Image 1 (cartoon, rainbow, N blue to C red):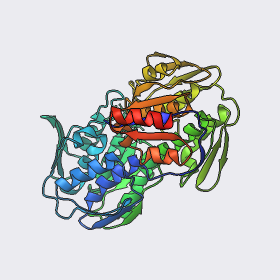
Image 2 (cartoon, helix red, strand yellow):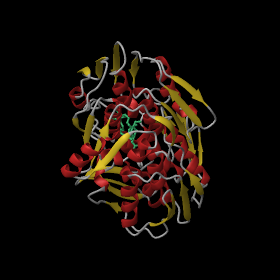
Image 3 (tube, rainbow, N blue to C red):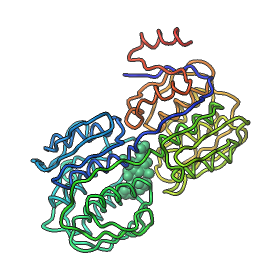
Image 4 (cartoon, rainbow, N blue to C red):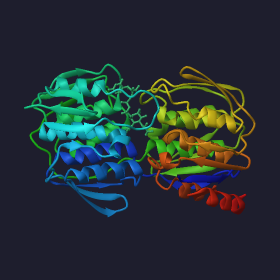
Length: 430
Ligand code: EPZ
């Protein structure tokens, strides 16, 4: 089991380059199977989840050429199996994007029920509802989601909840359906727009992505394209809060500042200075931080994927803050770990009541999921003394070179593979 050993207390200072958005990349990789021609994808993050998805795609006959660390060429002209099931794919959520993609192209697909971070119950009823509305049979059987039809026909679909995954899945299937599909109450996240732009660059006809009504006119087939994935809003936001919590001065580069507005607004509210340029945002944290209230919402609201990072920062800010999680019910599992570091947080249902403390002290803690894991690393960077974070496999699902990027900003953080190494690193950096 890999661990991070962190010596806290250094303000993070400098510039950090943000990679491609994991959650856009995952859907785009799946969507690349929707043509027999070769698709080139650039700015792909080299993280565990994208690699697991590509491995599963290769197992069903998709040819993937890794041109360099962030560029792949994908050819799905020889898919020989429409059943996607391996021990790793079950662990990632985005496997379900292969349902929409393969259903669109082959009118049939079977994918093992998706896993993903344990952040609450993660139903797929809206995905199934969408596929059924397009005329497919969609059932769960023996742990697999099975979708099948003779033909897909466009329909008017009203989503009961705002869901990124179901919106993208329906867009993909509808892109190759007969006639027009209208998705009402669609998700507006930047990665929904990115997937729609990607499909449009392959010849799809999708309008309205980024608003809550998306119109898709089905086309007969899609063609080759070259496409660069958008920058990762959540990776950028994570470094922004790392700057705030460590009293640092960090410029996140290669970002779309518009996507970061809800994050920047909260940082300003708690006392940071934000300077935006065309493709960079600088966060300066030189004053004592103060409390605020925040509720996670679908885009353009404050992202649920940033909830642990803001909470970790607020727990070091003066006064009482209230954090309300309205998307996933089980996203406060990091609180017990943070308590070991001296935080004063009480969770009641979907609300965390945070009494700011003056400092954290280093402790041995567990990363309970991807974003919570990253947030606990931020806590370790801000803490007095040494913090060891276990289970960093979760963090590596979604952050490329997280420790190296932090070291580039002056952090003292090293990766250890066993307890011996932890002890050695403690002596080295302690
Ligand atoms: C995506 O998950 C992301 N994952 C999540 O990021 C992110 O937290 C989430 O969107 C919200 O932004 C990927 O893109 C792979 P949803 P997804 O469908 O698509 C309910 C990370 O850390 N819902 O938008 O699974 C659901 O329970 C991960 O990178 C239904 O009720 O999320 C939730 O309350 C964690 N029925 C809400 O909708 C459905 O059929 C939003 O979920 C689907 C969802």
